Image (cartoon, rainbow, N blue to C red; front, side, top):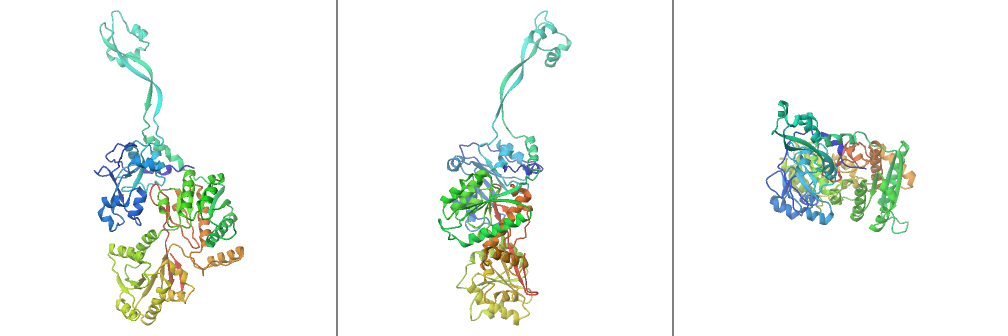
Length: 599
């Protein structure tokens, strides 16, 4: 299946035309694309969650290269900031991986057609190099890749009839008729090239004789406006499939034994099978190809050598980075979408492979999604950041949150926990003029047990204070211990998390009963529950294939699924890379009616 992305191209042409100063490019010297006067750089507008490291991976340069051009980036970079990025030498790229690209920063009013003319590369080639291209992502300040060596724009050689003119001096007694006979032309052709003959043929007059000859002509395949208009037809219809073909590559067992390699992976597989059954019961046909890839790359290579995997619509699995890299390369070679369900540390692969869907967000990305929502939620609260000296495992999160609050002018106060004076110290900071929110710097059970009793006592004895306890994803694992669920209700607690299942809900109870009936064991108590992850992922992607066919990535923003646990909100990391899952829930334990909400 093709991933040209042509459906969107015609819309891009509606942007007001405007061009950058052009630069010539070759494949053997360093060539640049720049919106400024600097000839060896381009410009990147920082987006939320990006770091200097992630940018260095995205553009194939070193962190030090970026630091040298942007000295302030050694301290911090912020969303919206514009950084200078050095162009990589094209010959070096070709030597390293065979893929040779320039990077171009889109200027205000620039069109895709204008860019194609600027570099002498067809619209098809640019689209092929930027498979996430949409009207939204083709915007001023965004970056696209330009193939340094043309992929499909090979010059065309044709034979054409060319008309040339020869000068001839008319001799005595020659007439229009004799001239036409002599040079095998018509009188109309002679008159067209010699209007003066309308006054008569005169001896000594110099005239032009049109002579037709065949010549071999090589025409440049420079892009034409018509090329772009013709691309409209490419994705007018959804390419549905009658049978969804899925490849599961999971580390299920140790060696040749029946001992599970990781019981959580087995639970994931069991949940995925429940999703397949659910879709089959609704009328969808599913073919499932399952391979046990163990914990090494040998079995992964063996699995990928099976021809049947070349025609699947979706690949799922891989545990280690080495396995994920192998599967991702296979997916890219055969143009198959690939969901990575377990790893949050494959960003480098995701950023350069348009077929990868990274389900689990890295901590850096999770914090970048969470902190703006927290700032918005509590902008009118007295925010107190509470540090317990023995445990501060969420200091990185707190640092990101403090930067978010400071950048937006939202005040906060910091407090260090001291057992003997904690109640008095905290009450000195609380206000009855606005709500208060307490955010611990730790996610540990130890830290939570230290503070929750005192907080509850204040809430129950000091009704003038409105208090919310705000915490971390790990807290959902404590709900069955030490009356913590009841404390959360009293403290109007909130937690941020990419996944959450409310085991008190009817849907969760139904799933739990079905799982126990099928596999004769209860759901795991830990969160996230891999069985539910397998079910959610299976239902989401199978539904995507049923609705939009194997090329569902073009419609990913239109896919809606109310998950049991793991939500999906995929966004492309750049115009040529894959997708990060940016889903984030705020889970509320509501004091007013003892309910649990997930928003």
